[in-house]
Image (cartoon, rainbow over all chains, first blue to last red):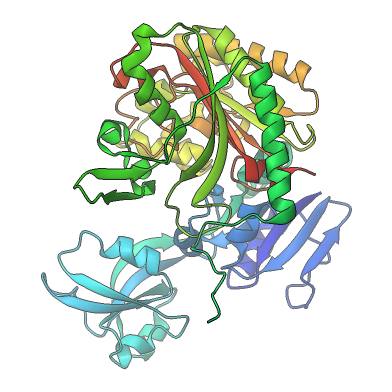
Length: 208
Length: 319
């Protein structure tokens, strides 16, 4: 039995579509349902439904053997997990956004709002300007709009929300991709099965 | 006044049953070490920082708790037993009768970001064998490690074997600007990045081994053959332990100077290297290997092999 953690958020549809395309059916898993745990006896898989931010912890502890999580979360929590493949669909970007184009002038100090304080510290390190990092849990666009912060560091998909709020994408700092993550100990134990899954995902050209 | 029982992040107090379990396990393991001819070294928890400066990598430096003593000396809390023992023995080696078999026990204190399974205070027990060259010493230490790590039974224990520098030739020949980043990608099994850089390394990422041993270069291929024989011998002696060779797991343990600035966990290993997973958690319960170059860096020439085990992690993983 292998425990596979699926995310509840925006990466779920990407994950389900990719596994369907690879011929690894997760029959019975109802993305809209309330079930948090489902055994699929014919495949030897147990699916757990977890929030994105909790998923690396479950995989790191070995409660789940593997899972799917966005690289934005993975970079932020640094769970020392294996990352064999990244999915082609569901990609977005992590960007610095603000009211005006252009980064702060050298020597200035600004406030930067984000859900990703560790990533933000790495992004700001080495810049000629400084930033006080404000950790928020959502609606990050409001921070620059209402002048809580000059900048925000957040995920941008289409840019429509930014445009609607009069904001601009100043700089893309990273591409964000849904990733398959695997616990190091589980990889040793389930290597053949995981390599089979990965091979099928690669053959279906849904990962890179 | 009510006093809070809260402790700082990453440390824990063991009381009652948990304390008794750890003490009993420690006594069993120490008895086994003594029976095997190892004598105890009792080391301080506080030391000067200066002797370790040349041995630190950015990662191990970041783990150290450092401070200035009242008399102005820069001190550090013990974060690793092996370098401490090595720096105390290196100046005395000529007057010592070799081989030396030593064991130690006690806390190591390491700053860790707050995350799963990463304690800041860790009670370790370990052994070091100095002055015995070649594969015999590696065999003795690995066998002793397995005996101690299977104290709670063999079921569920996975031991991964490799050797430092195994992938150096492939990493340095790959079509990349930064072989250190490629080594990290191999260790994280990032297939896309590895495939683009070096097709030969892809087999190592998938299976832990190259398609043909000679793909590693003549010297590493010879070492791989010896390691396969060692694995088979230990697998026969410990049939309940899953023993695998996985060179990707130790991709960051490079020997070439262009690869040794990387963030390898304990950067001094230069021969056999191994670690053990005791249960589902991704953090090993212990590990070890050959570290002759640590003594060389301290001005002494002596073959050295050793291991350490975390008692709490070992007990947590026991069925």
